[in-house]
Each structure stands twice: as C-alpha cells, then as structure tokens.
Length: 270
Image (cartoon, rainbow, N blue to C red; front, top):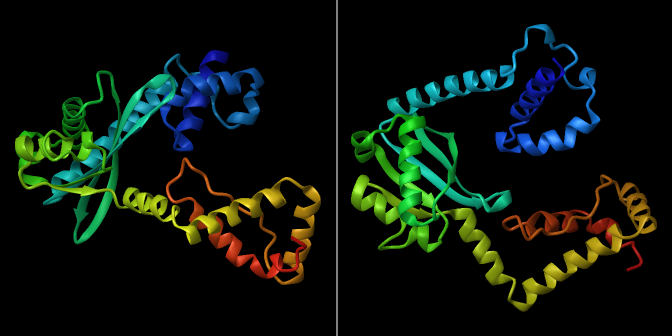
C-alpha cells in the first residue's frame, strides 16, 4: 500500500506542477527519503489505489487532452509548428514540439510532445520524429499535412534551417509545399544581444550590472543597508539581479531592476 500511495502522489504532484514525467525517477530519489503521507496528499482516499493508479490517471488525462487537440487542429484551416532541440541528463536528445492553430480569427497554441531522439539527431531523424508526433497527437496525416501546414519556426542551426538538407527544407520539398520557414524571433534577439555585448558601451552596462549584483549579494550588511534605503525613497525591497547565460537575453530584467532601484543606489557608498 505504501508503494501505491507514493507512486500516485508523486505522479499527481509532477502533473499538477507542469513538470515532465521524465523527472519521476529523480523525484523518487529526492522525495522518498523524506516521505510523509499526510503532508503530500492529505485528503487522498488511499484504500482503492492499484499498483498503476498514478500512471492510469495520467494516461486518462493525456488521452483527453490529445483528443481535444486533434479536434482543434482538425477544425483549423491552417496550422504552424515550432521546434526546439534540447539535451537532457544522460545526453538524451529531445525534440520539443508546439502547434499553432486558429479558433475563429484568434491564434491558439498547443503543446504536442517532447520526443526522444534515439538515433543521431540529424535532419532526417528530426523530420521523421516531427511527422510521427503530428500524426499521433494532432491527427495530421500526410494529406492534411500537405494542405494545412504553412509555417515552421526553429533556431538557426543548420540541422533545422539549412537551405538544402535542413528540417525546414525537407518538410517543404517532401511533405508540405506551402510551408514557410521562420528563424525563431527570441533566438535572433539573443544573438543580437550577444553581438551588442561586444560593443564598448553595452559591455560596460553588463559589467555594471554584474558588479552591482556581486556587491550586494555577497554582503548581508550591504543588502540590509540597500533595503533601508529602498524604504527611505519609497521603493519596494527588492534584491539586485544578475544575468544568466543559460537564459536568452537575461540581462534585460537585471538592467531594468538596476534602473528602477537607481534612486536608492545613489545613496549607497559605492
């Protein structure tokens, strides 16, 4: 019984927080050593759980979501997709796929799948994984795909956007002649940010943001003094932010925080 409760509770928590089910194994290692039944799902009736109740619940919800997505895509005159390749723990190659469709004159987006690429992540295998996912989860067979698919967005890597042998080129020449490839706008903005960082003025701004964060983050005394000054000038007590290399264009929130807190910073003895 304890195993059934643990399994169902972990699956329920992963799903309710929007986390991928691939995190189940890591979740078991993190949570089970500190397990307390009443603190996880206190109102759950445990007496009727089976050995696979958690996964049965998940598969039932998944089937319902897939059916609704198929209905929405089928009713839309045209669809577009966006793709993003990523790597998980253990060097697992993943392909994240979203579909965009019309409801009336409004665009809607739906998550399709997170496909594991078990073979080499080249354009041919990524194309086959994309076609398989669109047919399985969106109900787009070869004929509908040729008629409805009009747009594909991905990053600028050659495996995705190559003019001759990239995924976009394969989709257009073999499966969807109406498709128009689009280089992902956030990715282009991030590339632009990296190019601007090489300029003297932008480089100095990034250094100022980084030094400002380090100055306050590494000293409780300075952080407390900053909070007092924020209250004094009528600002919220907020910590300084730093840019993060793993996020696209992450220095913008940090610069905005520095600008908004400038009235308090001018009183600090820097």
